Image (tube, rainbow, N blue to C red; front, side, top):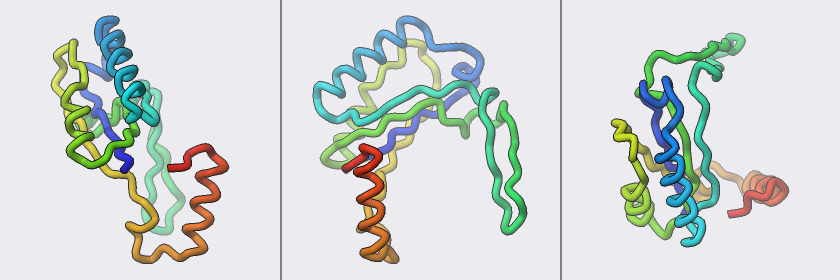
Length: 140
């Protein structure tokens, strides 16, 4: 099973870069997950001031809103994609995540949906999705 681990941003992460100590500890943690075969991808994100949101409202033309975004509790600060045998294993990895800067934060864990999760998935669309995943190097 693949899981997206979403590390939320906060006022601290929006205002300043992580400390050298935290970056070093995160590097070690990422290396440990790679050696264990669970880390498929992971990145930190720049502050919301450098971002944009595209808002869809029915049939209206999508609206673009430039950052920064005021609700820091709703921001994504980074993510991992982990391959774990189940949700509990993923939780155990996340509980070991370094927090040397002592920031308050929330980490959300969501299973990546597979074709079988969608009741309206046709065999044709499932085959197309598999082919696209293979072409983009994302085979699961």
